[in-house]
Length: 297
Image (tube, rainbow, N blue to C red):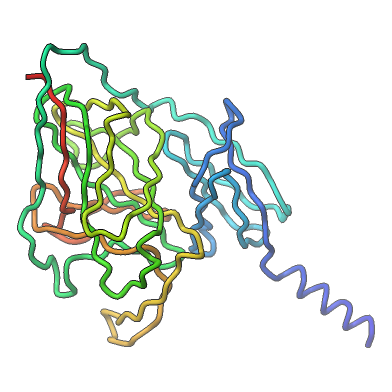
């Protein structure tokens, strides 16, 4: 009997979910990649690394992990039951440098207000930007430039808390910039700009000052991509209703909503960590934003 108990304990211990420690670094420079994303495809859960590029997460041997970071190629790893491991990501050779233009004699400020019509995009309201726990979605919207060579000075967007608790407002997010591919309505390659870590304020209007980046975009504009950093201390509970059978369930969410607007010509795009494909989840729905540019007169 004693031997049977020992064997049973061994079986349980080898089949429970283990805590693993992963450090994510650049293969070329060996520098840490802060807030990299680790998606456990097997368990349908997504995690964010911390500021040092490290993450403590749950995984079983045999789980399929996808590690990603802006400007680097995604890496698929089958976990081999190691307690810790360093994951090296390869630079994405398709990453594009920002456009550089010669200085002009006089610059003028131009403001683009992408407000559309502020009305509900569906029967549930303005359109949520939060995530269910374990489902990381990137959100992308196209920023239109007045003309070629304009420098992006600032970008503003609006938040709505709905039922989120006060602490959810301070959930940090990563913001990155991608090219607009000609004859394609989806993001292309990332510009050679490190992702911006932005912590929203308790004000409705959020403004990110980008003047120091000296980032100039082509006339076709660029895509701005938002993604929450999934730190468990920011999780909050939300009761939702299943659209098929009407049953209620409680889910974990991150962050708060971004205010939407009605603008069919520039829809808000979504891409999940589990499906590497952009799509517009709500027809005619876009993100309310305001961009300020500095352009040659």
